[in-house]
Length: 363
Image (cartoon, rainbow, N blue to C red):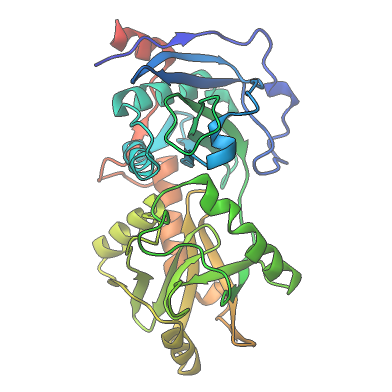
């Protein structure tokens, strides 16, 4: 099914105001946004319009009961200047898994992809050309009922906006294993990209930063024994000749960058394990000289090297970044795919259709 997306263009682009060599992450936004409204059991009025503020009723249910989900994606350009998306269909599917967990309606995958192509095609000049930079894409949905009562909303708004970004973590990060607060438990909302998950992470992160660390390493909520994630990313360890990442057990987000890294490693013949990973195993590996690397993996950073991990009052320093190989390899592979400097044999990189092509497909 194809959808007619009404497009209203800005009269004056703000692109000339942007210094692409100095982009603060998450504070610069492109000219247009996609919007659709859900009521009477269906999505209505899909449209692209100028990026602008919108008004909200004081009783908007998302503000009171937390029915809000989002995705994070990136668009890049090939070495020839062609705009590209990276595995967009997986983001559409994960958005709907989040919606299901938060008792929200599915958003049609075909409309999601059409909207992405039309919006990024329209604002493709906002994709930074610098290495390590990209056009960040934020699809999100929130409950829009004007009602105070704990029940699922009957009205929702779905929006996609974009903005150019530079590197997220330009330097290796330091972590402290969190032993008081938890990110998620089995049966909770950890697998969903729900807004409340991130709100609940802010205090532990603040405390970690006050202690001199960049972020927290989350442990399980039952025993504070098993590693879950790092900050807002999945986490990988290189233990001897094996790459290990915690298994997604219901409390860990099924990251698309995580999935991509696992596929790349397996294709290249690395020994890979997805399993419960106890913090004590990391301590022992560090003591035995077998902790070769640790890195976070997510859309914003792709790979963020970890410089040290604090646990029980002691810092575990990891080998210098220049002595590591796995994290840099997978980051270079993903960035190379996004720039088309590495052949895409898996069909992950999707050229962006122009607005005209999207409209022609609809008609």
